[in-house]
Amino acid sequence: MNISDAFFNSLAQRGGCEPAEEKCLALLDSLGIPYAGLTHDPGDTIEICEEIEKKLGAPIVKNLFLCNQQKTAFYLLVMPGSKVFKTKYLSKQIGSARLSFADADAMERLLGLRPGSVSILGLANDTEKRVKLIFDEEILTEEYLGFHPCRNTSTLKLRLRDLQEIFLPHLGITPTVVTLPTE
Image (cartoon, rainbow, N blue to C red):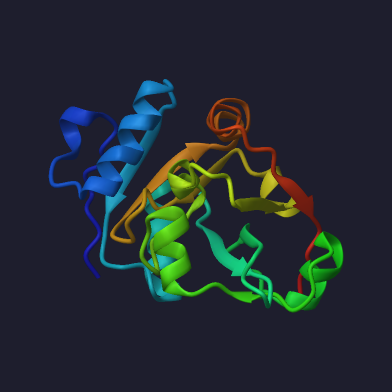
């Protein structure tokens, strides 16, 4: 496992960013939203995510890119990383039957992201506002959350309040809050 001990928190300290990540971080900087981050191997195992959480001091959330059966409605669900996702609980609360994971083409087209890199920060790329944001209420109890900045080999620690009061209003997004069960 390769996780950098060096946190980055400004343009001058980042270096080596991909264009999507650079755009994301530049937006946060322009909005005056403080963050800390680290680079790491792709966070595709529980062990890697747990290590990232420890180093960041913030829980890593699941960001699930979903769509309806007709692929006409798209959703980004942000939920605790420890919860198991079951579509039936979400479908009832948002009034959209037959939810499934949206495909990579839709993710690229709507959010400009590749699978594994999706996060709330990618909503800045949704200029047509086609993706509806959904929060599981449980994440709203956290002070800080961990998100990928549009690539899955780095993670940022962001204050939830900054996302709610600065980032989302800047994008013109009001999230829907749902209650998903813990099993």
